[in-house]
Image 1 (tube, rainbow, N blue to C red):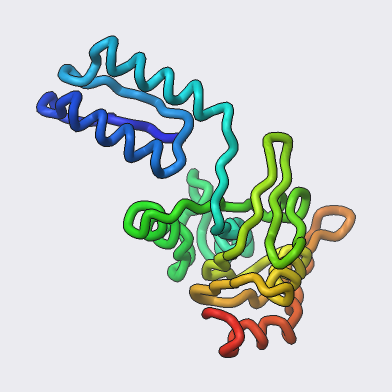
Image 2 (image 1 turned 135 degrees about the vertical axis):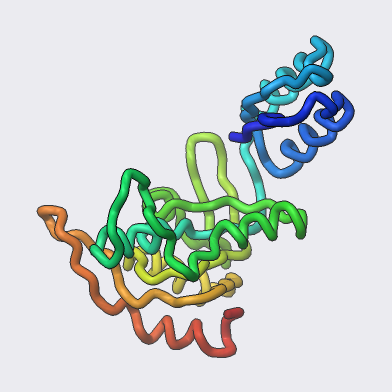
Length: 212
């Protein structure tokens, strides 16, 4: 999902809008919320946007790189009462939270598409086969050769086991910052139970055997 052309001046021409539209498609967008400007609202332009998006929404993104979404790390500070809460979901992001910087650097500067995997998605729909991390859903299957582990303070233990299995099978794991210090596992009634996760694998990951 991508929002386009909002807040642009009247000098923003249809030619520029067309280039931005193609850039968004190249970066993996298949649903576009278009805010036409005075000079970028012709029927020809809007029809071309509609036709391209109609076609792309029936496809399935294929790429070699996946990144684990560090949702538990984003929740760590407010949910563990280390910072005051507010009306926002994340009142203050952890200071070393780098997943957005990584995604923007890969997509916009290196021209490498990636898929961001929610922890539940990795648990429910991913498995290691033949040295790749496969993501299976109703639309298709994607085999990832590279898995990025952004700075994380807390992780699901089953996710970490999947990362370890992928690494041991020959996959490339790139850890960019803080390695997990706690495992976020739920008891029956929903209370969190933090514990130190898989210290032997984390020690292996922090050594020269993995890119870190």
